[in-house]
Length: 42
Image (cartoon, rainbow, N blue to C red; front, top):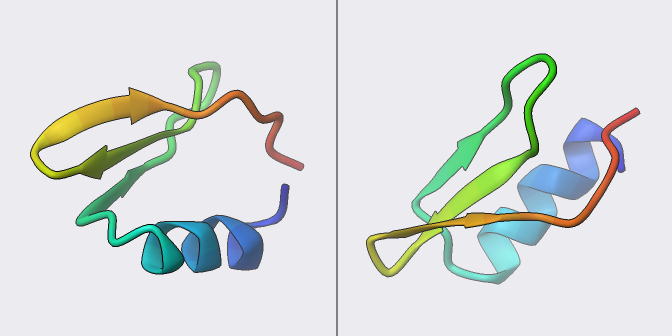
């Protein structure tokens, strides 16, 4: 998934944060809880 797609996903799902760290799973914060996304960034 590309950065534009990650940002769109976060916005569409009303996430307050998008966490991207090298070597780690991508995560979003939704309603105060951190959720790992089951995707592979490009």
